Image (cartoon, rainbow, N blue to C red; front, side, top):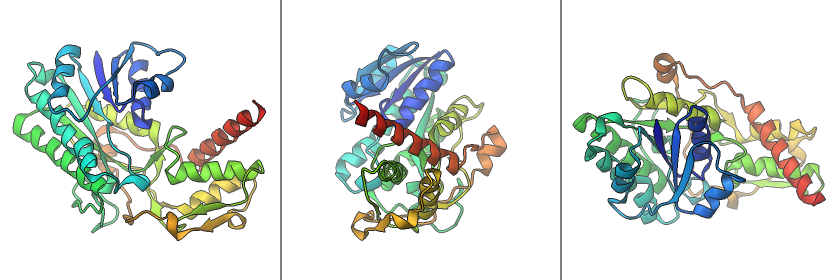
Amino acid sequence: MKAIVTGVSGQDGFYMTMLLLERGISVLGLTSNLAVANSQFAPRLPGDLSLAEFDYRRPGNFSTVVEEFEPNFIFNFAARATGQGMFDSPYEMNRLNGAFVVDILEALRNSPRRDEISFCQSSSSEMFGNVLETPQSEATAFRPKSPYGAAKSYAHHMTSIYRTTYQLRCCSAIFYNHESIRRSTQFVTRKIARGVAGIKLGLAQHLSLGSLDISRDWGYAPEYVQAMYQMATAGQPADYVVATGRLNSVRRLCEIAFGHVGLDYQQYVRVDPDARRAVESVNLHGDPARIRRELGWSAKVTIESIMAELVDHELGHMQSAASS
């Protein structure tokens, strides 16, 4: 069995690759920066993994990869990031987060092995945007509020269209926020963890955040790629919300993270309005009932465990840097 993982150097690409390799599946990891990807899997490539630099901006380029590698699975994590960058370069955002998915779908449609390939797209809760209902399910309308959410919505709809029109084995995982030590530092969970570690070690005096009252459905990245794998190997392809079903505020994240090292967040956290995102989607709270019912998946790692892991990682990293 073989799989292509796009965006292999990102958080989700890394965890999906490791999951596939543990199951004896050969992986071709595609990346726009081969040096970064090599460093992610250093000191040597584990299992049957090969990495290749890929230009996501060239239409039709993906067909050659599918023809030569002959995958059984394709997992797409290639995307310009969310967070503070959701309004940066909207054209490039649409090209990578939206139009590239059509390149994948066209490659599948034209492949003589189309019936042997399962494709899973990484969709986003940002597609819901200005939500009409809480929590959100697979039936909730999309009302994106950013170029990121709009591009993801386009890719999501095109995946559904190709599944129904051409009977392709393709589906979308509607991921809510999911965290790990491999999450980019521009995201609030990592920002909080780094701030806590710095303050605990006497390297910083306070932590500035844009808002403490924003709430999200935060889960654990390794569990979420497991859900995506289960979707790709299910009997019938379908779209699923992948979420914990639990809301937590940024204030709660601070309380947990500072409390993990014996500190009171109220003494160190400052609110900085300039640090807020241009547009905040509110009440992004997922309803994972369908994936729990049909695939038996549910999120088990708590936000307390996630934040403790992030803080411990940052403490270890800072202590190692200080002693070197």
